Length: 282
Image 1 (cartoon, one colour):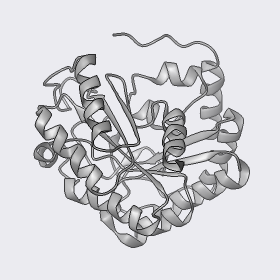
Image 2: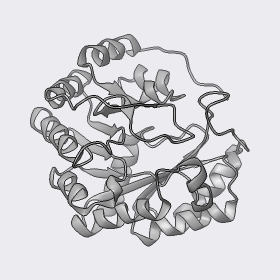
Image 3: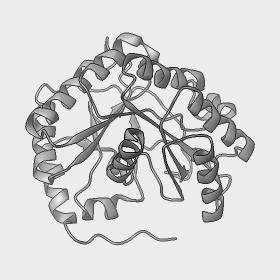
Image 4: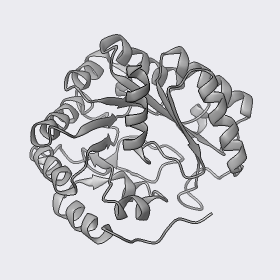
């Protein structure tokens, strides 16, 4: 399996992202889809800096003391979205456990800035768990993103070892609270496979997500960012295995499912959003 070489508007995307001064998860997380997405002028922006307060053993983002939030970042971000002519944009962020509101207020400012500058652009937010603090989740929901994405990441058994500062049940609570605060807001989550889980465990996780009324799910292959500093890949799933997981997800009620080796939370997020919006409107 191979990813395409850069083509199309790749260089233009590089220039716009560089000019914005805003980090992208595409680069920081070493996404295998970067060349494809950037060639289509699609980028997933990572606000609040590129230093995370948490250390997860699957993630390539640096763990360090973060810099203070940059006040002009929302405006620079909105300008980049406009220059890229994005009709749907995904905003993610490092975990900011150092801030009183864990970055929720800054996140909300970024959503508002995009809506004001690009009123026809839908915004998908992909935050950390905010420790499932209702006031933080409410702050972000009140900025009216079109989709709220929070990744469960992996099955419950593996979470304490590979995501030690996260909690499986806490992530489910985040998604539950979003639906309680904003019932009409589309919710989405993602799972990685290949870390040593079983198919039964994956089915249980999908059931748990539907139990909190999660609308959309993505399922993709875990790829080890570095040889010695990250959790090893235990298994590479076949395309047929991804198809089977996708069929199970549809059978338990997800309105939109993306399941495949290179699927990531924000991969083809515009198409996934439109599909889920259309199906939920029926």
